[in-house]
Amino acid sequence: MGINFRQETFRDDFSFKNSPEQIRRFPFPFHEDGYMYSVNIEPHVPGPKNTVFEHLFDVDEHYISEMQDRAMVLAEDPLRCQSLPHMTLAGWDTLELLMTEKAKSYPDLFSLTRDGDQWHWINRPLGIEDRFTFGDTSTLPYGPLEYITRQSQGDFAVLDQRDGNLWMDAGMVTTQADWSLDFDIGMNFFEWHAPVPLAHELGVFTRALKFLMAMQQGQPARRFNWTMTINPRLDTSPENYHKWGTDRMTVTPENVGHKVHLRVEVQMFFRLPRSNALLFPIRCYLLKMEELVTSPKWARRFHRVLRDLPDELAEYKGLVRYRPTTVEWLSKYDDGQPTSPGF
Ligand code: HEM
Image (cartoon, rainbow, N blue to C red):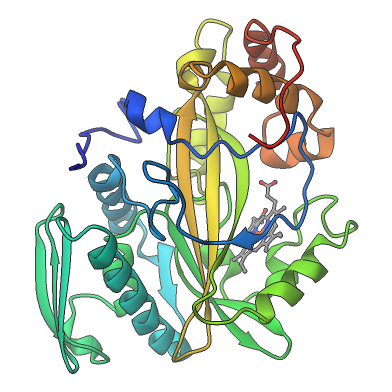
C-alpha cells in the first residue's frame, strides 16, 4: 500500500499531526508502569507488518515534510552536518546501507542500480535522480553522508572505534533532543554522555560501550529513548534554544492535548563494513497527548510513568515546568486498573 505523505510543518504554525494509522504504529516505549535508565538493547530484526519495525529503516507519512525541515535547518546552520576527514569512508558505508535497504524495503519509492562502481539512484518522493561513482565524492552534490541523510528520516551519528572507545567523528543532527553535534564532535562515549544523571552510577555506560564495541556487521541492534517536546518541533537544539526554550512555559490545562508531545527515539546500531565505524541512527517519532489517549492502555501507563518519574530524570529531560499540568490532564484517563506487563 502506498504512503500518503503529509504536507505539514514542524515550526511556525506547527501543522504536524499523525493520521489514525500512524498513531496505531507509534512505537510506544514503556513495557511497565515506571521508567528508569537501563541497558535496554535488543537485536534490530524486522518486525510485524504495519509497525515501525517492519523494515530496518522506516519511511512514513512524515518523510517529505521531515526532509524539508532538515533542509531548512541546514540552510541556516551548515554545521549540523559534519564529517572529520578520516570519516569519509564511513560516509560511503552509510550511503550504501541506506540506499540498499531503502530500495529493498520500498521498491515503489526508491531504486538503486549498480554496475561496478557506477551507481544510479532514484528517490521518487523527493524527485531526485543521480548517477555517481561510488567512492568518488566529486560525483555527488554533497559528501556521501550528507547526500544520503538529507534523504533519510532521523538523525545519524557516526562513531569511529579506536583506543578502546567510540568517538563521535561525523553526523547529521537536525532533529535532536537538546544536544549539539557541533559541541560533541570529536568527543568519546563517556564525554558526550557526561550530562546524563544516574546512569553512570548504575554502570549503564560501561556495559553499553562494551556491548557496542563488540558488535558485528549484519547484526544490528536497537534501543528506545524518550523525552517530551512542547509543540511538534523537530529541531530542539541548543543552537536554537532561544526559539523553543520558552515554549515550555506556555502549557495550560486547556492546551495540553495538542501542545504536549511524547517524543520517542528509536536508536539503532549498525557496524559498517569498510570503515569498521558504528552507525547510530536516531529516529524521532512525535505523538500529541490527545493522540496518545486514543489508546486507553497507553494513557493509563504514560500517566503513571510521568507521575512517578524520578526528579533527576524529569530535570534532565526538561519536563519540570509542565509535568504537573500534564500529569493532572492525563489522570482523567487513568482508571486505576492494573496494567499488563510487556505490551
Ligand atoms: C543521552 C549519544 C548510545 C544511554 C545521550 C545524549 C547523546 C547520546 C548525544 C545526550 C547527552 C546530553 O545531554 O548532551 C549517544 C550515541 C550513542 C549512544 C552517539 C551511540 C554509540 C547509548 C547507549 C545507551 C545510551 C547504548 C544505553 C544503553 C543514554 C541515556 C541518555 C543518553 C540514558 C539520557 C537520555 C534521556 O534521559 O533523555 N546519548 N548515545 N546511549 N544516552 Fe546515549
